[in-house]
Image 1 (cartoon, one colour):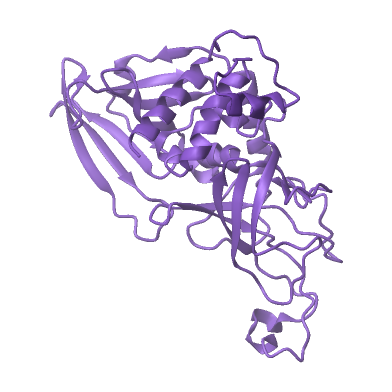
Image 2: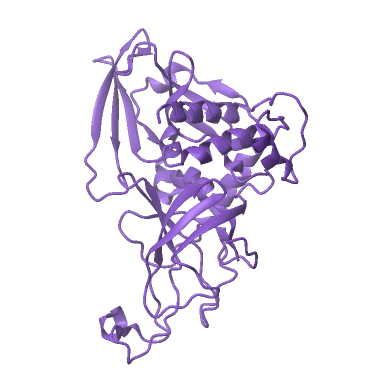
Length: 362
């Protein structure tokens, strides 16, 4: 069965720590990202960062605020985990000398604002220019409407098949395969949480499903509203982890009295047929469209990161000396070998640097 992983409008009360994202905002960002994917890298003026006005960032795991204290000549850096109830912030101050920000990682590291495609980033690089840390610039509106999570949605989203079986999409952004009266299939994923300690993503899936409960079932009286037939049930919770060909999904919670058409196993490997950027080929097309922070890359297995590196170059027709790697891309209908070294875009160059730095830390 094929399924479209995309975040649909909120249809039920969210559990604590989960954030929803509106479809129209997400689709608008997808179009904008696609059209700006080949823009050059631009280093923004230091004065933009050394401002006494607060700037807001999201590194994929933590929400961050920075502001410059001119009296103390220090850049204040505050971060906290927005996915947990306990939002105790971590604070740090970085001395600023001659407009150079002195980082604890060493004098040879630099912190700057960079524009990459559709994104303004706060980027830490080492002496070689390799990406060490990075965060996405976000506005207060993006924080309130969940759009700050867009990079994670794009990392996980797409059309998938389970165990190689193709069929109709199981859920989608418009919930076109969901009949609220007869419950013919599940509505879409509509909310996301990041668990830093477990190193996993969690999504709410299938909220608003209709119960087909039986009064003789011992669970009947324990359900809110009796759990009777026709009751609106809560969502499943899926634990989602990337793997080479897509996502590994485990159902960690489901509601009673709810069936699935087609059926969904409690654990499955989903093969990605294409991502949200359907005009960019490959399993991990997202790596050629948006910058991916080191914090998000830390959630991705080594084998998958290595595949992402090769796939970025394959999209430009590079020929690979490793026959096993070359055989993988020869089998792809979109691959056309040019026998020339790949000329990466600024975003691909950023992601290549960040992925190699992540692999070197393992």
